[in-house]
Structures are given as C-alpha cells and as structure tokens.
Length: 290
Image: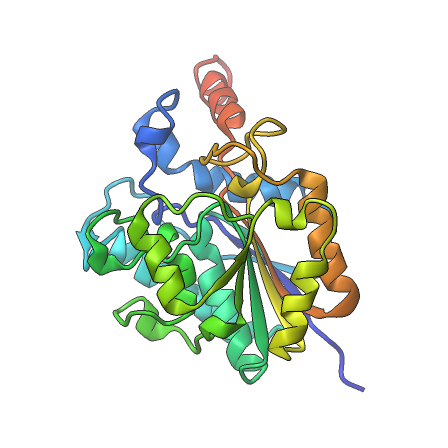
C-alpha cells in the first residue's frame, strides 16, 4: 500500500518584492526583507506538524541587481534551483508552502503539475493577478510575475528551470480587485483567465466549485496571498486595497474545495509583519540582548 507524503516548505524569499515605497514606516532594509521574517513567523504560528519541514536557503544580502527585467534576478535563480533540488530529493505528494512573497508558489506548483501529469487546476486567491512580464518595463518585482511564471509565459534563467507549466484554462483568480493598469486587464483577457470577484464568493463557494468541475482536473493547488484580505479586518500584507475578502470567507472557500478535491499544494504568501519588525528593532537596542 502506497503512502502519501506531505512536506512543509518554508520559502522566505523576499527578493521578488520591490515594495519599500509602500511601507514608509519601515526602513528600506526592513521593508525589503520583511517577507523573510514573515515566512518564518508563519511557520512559528502554524500548528505543529508531524510532516517534515524544510527551509529553502535564502540570501540575506540586501544588495540586489536588476537583470532581464527582474530585481534580484541572480538570487532568485539560485533560490529557484535550491527549492527544486529540495523537492526532487524529497519527492513529496503534497506541499504546504509558507512564504515569502508570491513567487514562493512558482516552484512547488510547477513541480506538482509535472508530478500529476498536467492534471492540476490552480486557484490564485489574490487582490492582484500577478501576470506582469519582465519585458513590460513597468515593475521589476518577480512577485508580480508569479502567476505568469507558473503558466510559462516567458523563458529565462529562472523559468527555464521549472519542470512544467499550468495552462491558462486551468487557472482561476479569486478575490481579484486591483489590476493596477489597463495592460494587465487586457493581458488577462488575452490569456482567457477567468476570475471571481470578492462578491462572487461572499456567501458561498458555488462558483469556485463549478469552475473546478469544468476543468476536469482531479488535483488542485491554491495560492493564498494575504493581501486579498480586507484591510478593515486585518492588515497582514503590503497591499491594503479596500473591500477585500474576510478571513472566514477565504477559509471557507479553501475548505469547501478540500471537501471535493485533492488539494496537493497550498501556499500562504506575502506576510508583512510590520509590528513584529518594529518589536525586533526595539529589542536590538536594549542591553544584555547578545
């Protein structure tokens, strides 16, 4: 009898965000590397697990160079390789990923797409569609390109390592409410990616489940970007676009999917623990801390 193997992957990649201007109450270094602390904090807060926990090694060097339209290109390429090596060595059937910015989903999801022979549907729960391309020359943060990378929309030294791609007809955006620019809205239409608004899932998960049924896929991966949450309830991420999903609504959607489908990948991403960063800095200034 075969047994299913689940791992917890702590993926504190921070280089994919170019967000310091959005968090003026933190220093540029603290804001930039905030995702690193965020991922490790998620792991600390998550329930104890009997599953193996592995951590992707992440550079702490604050100096990042832009190459090929991506900030921190060299570091992200190296960390992509490291994450793939972990998964290839462990050969898990299911992966819980704790990020890190949104690109923490890219390696696990493409690994799972290959493992399950292209029988994977992707639910991307996010305020933004994350389909910027490096050649857009508008924003160089890889986290805004994460969904496009999963779908294999360009090839370079980062995406060229990925083991598979998920076709656009098996991708659904949920909670989408900020396209940031017309170019992204037009691209989503060009790709033919469907989305559900916050109101579409306010009372039940019917539309999500109907879409999943239409794909014919048996396996599901879910990306949960914390900026989908309503900032009037909680500010847990960088994004604070109003009128988001409630925590209970996101939990209900994910659990309703789990009732009917095999969730093989779940990522929680984009935690920006502002208060924890400030407390960390406070402690560093007190005596007897070393």
